[in-house]
Image (spheres, helix red, strand yellow):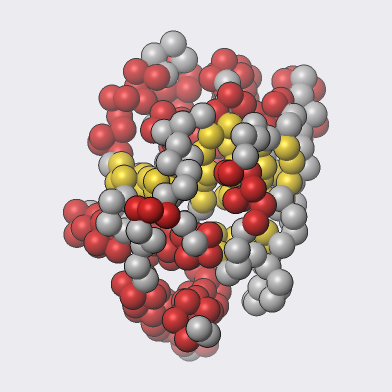
Length: 296
């Protein structure tokens, strides 16, 4: 009985959160084209049929608090339906929507000389974050946002990076480490000291830091012994950033937390854990509605 009530409560919360989130996204207006100050820096999100609502909030909150228009790319994992695509394009007019089908040929060509990379890309949808996004990035630097990263204040560090010519690689520091294999084994076999608690949910990436040769080596080395294959993508980005070794972790105001409410000083919050979407839809739409439309 208790479990049934809990399930019902989560379902109602999800529906209410989706409804308010949809309202926030619908009421928001993209900044005009005159606000497109960094045309060569594209912003990328990967969404599914279950996460596209949150992805819209992530994109809308990012543009609102940066007070700029960006070249936003929404990559879908093959599960997003046409009606959902239309909804995304209506809320974000001018968005670059990249279907899984559209990306296949271009990425296959890019990975033609890297058979392990191409073979692994089809094994887990999260691999699209590593292999597809750099192929579509417009310039030599790009920003990546997970769909469960919401902005609540102006991200000065991101804007400074975008406005300058920095080739530093910045990431969101996690509360613990999650790689496909223990850190010690990666460092021993790859000869790279990994940056601490790397999380790929929010990244500022110079494309020069990404090496398909290094990715091929890691995949071949650990493809049969990985403890957590779902973290291969995060491990690949951690390896690239650490090997590049310019940049580091964003401040702790770019929050990753398992708690119920965010720190009031946080610039962003990356929602993690088994109940992350419950918390996201409880806190996110209400806070964004207040900050975007009521506070003035």
